[in-house]
Length: 490
Image (cartoon, rainbow, N blue to C red; front, side, top):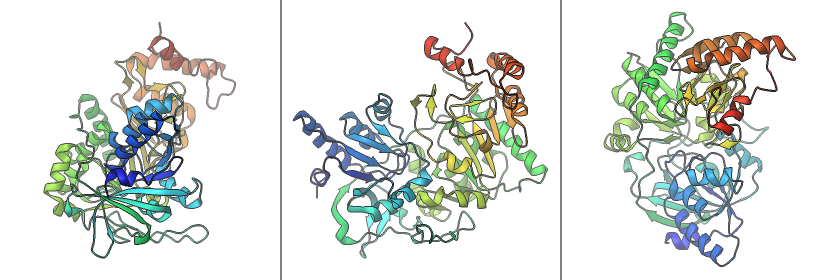
């Protein structure tokens, strides 16, 4: 049926689960048609909002359109749309920021209540009724299983070569009946290539032909190259000391220009025989797959630039031999991350001198995107690395601060901090030792003396001397920025 007719199946107050993970594999037509219906209902004075669950961020055609007509009551688990972000920070949309590995199991535990309808993009339907997944898997398996009814969007724009690239594992269970997941290597296949849905649950099939959202990555700038250089030097140091093999360990890379640049530099530095066990595959990993530097890559979604998408479509048969897309409950599974021994590389908004990392909130109160999968990897990785430029907003903000204004990853889960200034290896260090190392290696020179002064006075005057803080001014840098648009001293 048409997208408009399919959207009429969604009623006010429903909990609706939709496909999509970092701008890939999200429904392209039904959300827009639903937004039109919601806007018309509001014009008539009717309240029409839905509770919206996804895999991660989607695109303007979904999050943006529904947010712009005030059609979202609740959103989880991760978003990146500017319109939706504005609504959340204005207090107009309730937002649950959740580790993406938790979402499927929380849905099965019943933590989110009943799911009324799932809207899922697929790239095709086989004659036997099995569904060929799209460019992301995300939570689609769980949404189909848990929803009372399913609307399928069959996107004929997606490359037919996706058929066979996925690995959908159907053997998960609820406690106390769980069994070990038999995945021993990132390239292992432990399930089947297709999603399953009982025909009686399918309420509508909508044909679409539209591309995923794609964002061009910036060419690595000097800051990104310096960060990459520091991290690669560190990895070589670990190889020399026998703590890493020459082929490293499975790589995880969060979304962003800096992490994309770091992975790209690995290919230029002579590494080979690499693997990736990650949530999102970006351009740099696609290049390493194409060049034979990366032997196997496991992810749940593609997050490619327009050029990367074209390269992927043109050489999809080649990539299908080495790339596997899985449900996010597998791609981000904490036990697998720990057992495989991943090297986790994620961005951050800020870190404090003791190694606590804020990856979600600007000035401690305004959500940016969300924690996504960074916590799944940071807590369980063999090496947990957080990367960022040392300053932001033309040097008015220091990303290294006395106390993080919001903490997503505690000092206990952070092994390495890297800025363009240097790399701080925090393993085996006490809080005061970490503070000295972070100030020396990671802080920008414009803020280093201020941090050192704070730390020295805290060591003398703090209530306790284990993790010394001056509580009356620990967050004063953030307050300065809120009041004066700068963390610098007047």
